[in-house]
Image (cartoon, rainbow, N blue to C red; front, side):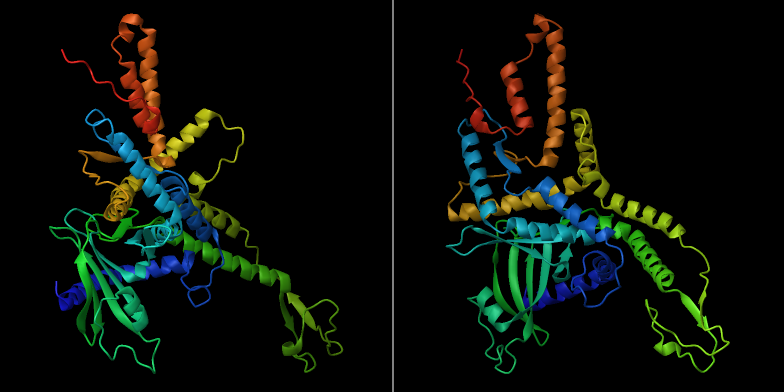
Length: 470
């Protein structure tokens, strides 16, 4: 695409995004205000903000826990190459080390906040300059800067990032770009210019281009091609025919507005109850503008007048507590705060803990499947591509034929424990049938199956013995 074609396509995609912007603005204003104190509705209830932060933190802990291995690389066929498992294990350790030394945890948490509030998150994965502690650099792209298009595969594979940058920032980010001589003006050193970074799919790999827009025309800053797309756009859920996702805050927005209004009315009623409503005769002595209702105050009145008299309140507002309790419970349920919080009872049995974990897995099932396809798998592939180009990991094909990703996050382990429990139940049943029935079970193969199911490291397994030829 030419620079002008990129600008035109980004503008068309931006027009299709505009109907979503009003809903996103309401969600952020009520839960995660972009600029606190800079306008927006007055907030009186913090239930939604607290539940949204807890959900984002739970996503981080359940999907990509910090300083813990949440993924592994295993061969598809263990018998094809006995040394491949060790090579993949070392590659996974190398990648985990770079993730730990990078800003991954900080940025993925911010992307999860966008995911919870607006239903869509965008993470930029770049190669860090040589000499830094990690080869990876991550940036949580604000949703207001991202314009997305869904491809034929059902994924958000076309991303336009619209960002305002100063001339100095443009020169630093694109050192090889030929900039117009009048781009940096001495009288306006902080002036920003619109830059569009575009990534779209092509036959030889994702294409990338950065375009500077000036006077309605585009100027190439840089262009190239990637092995894996640097922008990872992912969604909580989506309705058929829609491009952008729907988040839990969007679903709970009516209840959030109602709870905020109820608390506002409760506070107004409380102020009336504390200060009261008063009436006084207009006797020419009492000046309501100068009356101060405080302890020890002396309020003058004319002789024989009733002075300042309290006015009885029309009634109580106790029903508000019922409405507020119901709204807060619905908000916490929509944002899964009551499901993901720590157990309230310390005397829970092991079975209850497992059932609670299984229920969490069921609630996250659809969302986890989408995040695995749109975020986790492309993230590992993109990071391995960067490390492979630097020569820190060998060429690894995550194509389902040579190697595959084995997720080891707490949420992924729940299903693994269930599968392992079924296998152990089968082995116990076979053992109860007697030696003749137990003879049909290959115990070493069963042990290896349990190791794969429970994501055990390959180093603890004995190498496969080749069967002697006949």
